[in-house]
Image (cartoon, rainbow, N blue to C red):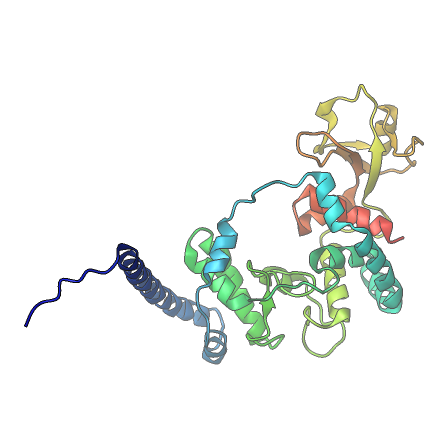
Length: 328
């Protein structure tokens, strides 16, 4: 018998080697994840999660490579403030927001009276977070959170969020299969993380579950409850665009510098139309959201700082305020 001396083409040999390495790596990763998951289940049981809930929630759980990719991805470019505003406070979104305010006026009015939060801010947050419920994320939340908790980069944070997500299922608010959200675990039409759900989600329609995925009464009330518990003042606005004098010191720009509105007027700050600022006994700050301290200036009040508790981005908070103003 003559031994074959035929050799595989180089490209095929490399492809087979790459496949073997990839297969071995994925198998090892899966084994490691399974081991991690087994330990996590023991911890979850000690924190009140039943074996039945764990069985249902982890029935098809698996690490999602795309989640890790999104968590570590660096943006290819940074949007300017104007580009961001054009994207999130578009004419289309303003038009739809106005129609939603009219369509759900009765419900929004009831929620507003209960939580002392103006309807236009509820709708603005709803619109910017998920385009009025249109884009809520299609990732399985349990698998996403398990992936991030296993990954190790921010494992402690996501481990806690995963426990809280399991408690939401345990309490009967939603099934594991229906619990969809963003790659980072933000859920529903208001994009609550599990910790925010436990702190602020409301069963406003009284059906026994706080359904931030499908129930508009629950969604609106949960948004309003978040703002109310975070210090919202229903008799105040968020702020307004202003004009600064050419001699205005850069040292006065920033959220840390607080002055009465009258003091800002005395320093030459005016409304965007050139008129005097309103007379009100409120502390305020001057910000310029654009990176580098350029671009438009705004005077911001307490409610702006509350929006920052929802999302720490000045871009986001200013956009919410501008969209809310456009809905009046």
